[in-house]
Image (cartoon, rainbow, N blue to C red):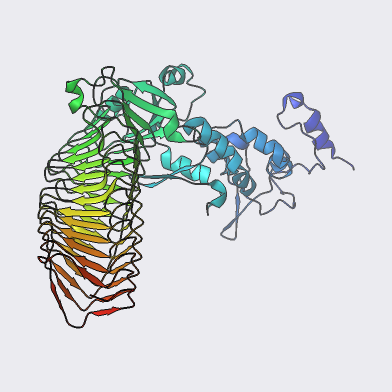
Length: 588
């Protein structure tokens, strides 16, 4: 191919050896002149310019419309001929702001500068996450799998969402400020050595309040939060396992008035005192949430080795946190303590293996407790004196009771599962409440126990395979027990005794290993519209001064009779066509 003389002169002229564009070309284009721009296949190509990526000719205006002039040969080569691998290698040395500027040069650079691998490298260097942490709105964080995300570059999207914030790690500040050239263009990022220093930066308005706490153990810092800060762990892999904040002398986190929209997430929070039984630690906790604040605690691991107090304490009027996706386990005291008119939403948590109650509600506390797993407690699963709603929880394998409700409590227990406990649900001391839609089974004692003037509503439950009776009503217990299925219990399906007067209505009570319904020792009440069948003994047994009203029931399949009455004091009223059939000995 013949090369024009002026091109040869330009290539071989002064400074040619130092030109950054002495690269191999497939072809050389004629030199452009001001008088007559050469027509090439580059005409019409993108000509957006930045000072970092070469000089472009000025546009000529023709017929009122702008028309791009052809690019210079070196510019043409960089934009269109240089292999993608080489461009990506060059881009890999750029920080995020320079990479965004490069993307403005042309369409090809825009595509290459948005390569997910480039942004993943930058992202992990800044935030450490091995999966993008999305932050679409205040108080909401979640990690995603990049290959399942609908957008092509979740690393860049997350980078933009998290960009303005402060970073905490021992030695960070010195490294950052000792290398200004390395971090040029990252003026929006601040670096601190301690969490206390970062909180001080928020108070002095150095940044908006987004704090990233990086991998490490942070011990005995005084973390008192009284502004709507956001603090989140930043680490590879399982984030909460790598970011550990602990205190040995005082509460690890204290939320005070003014922190109503604060967020803390993705970290391990410990209270680990040297003297684990010191009485003054009764007021110290992993998390202490006080009056008039409603922070969000999300995806945290919460542990306390102190034998007094609780791991989480929510106390006072207006204390209304949201605690979700947390693990409150292996504590040597109460897991979650809600008291003194405190409220809040507690959902999707794992609460297990705590020495005392998993959840304790007291002194007019009124929480909403939803979709939690409360299990393997060394004491009670849930211990409530007062109000509250318990919705769709699984409460099982606790050494004492799944739920204890005391002192005129008005709890609602909707759709939890209670199983493999010493006693499933205990209601006494004038207890009230709604127990609905639960699966209660495998208990060592009664699945539901109602006593001492308690009067709950028990309905739509399955109570089965207990090592004792299904429902035990005693000591003047009351209540409405309706539309439950009670079956395959070792002792009676329902026991009514010692002056109790429940109403049992429209239940299926069957396949028990002894009696279906057992009234004794002045057990009274109403038994109506039930289906009672296939028991090893009689369907209904009445004895020792008991006088229930029995009407409109279907009682069948009992191997020892339909209704069996013992002793002259026992009796009862049977009316309205009770159907008694299919028994091996006479019906009554």
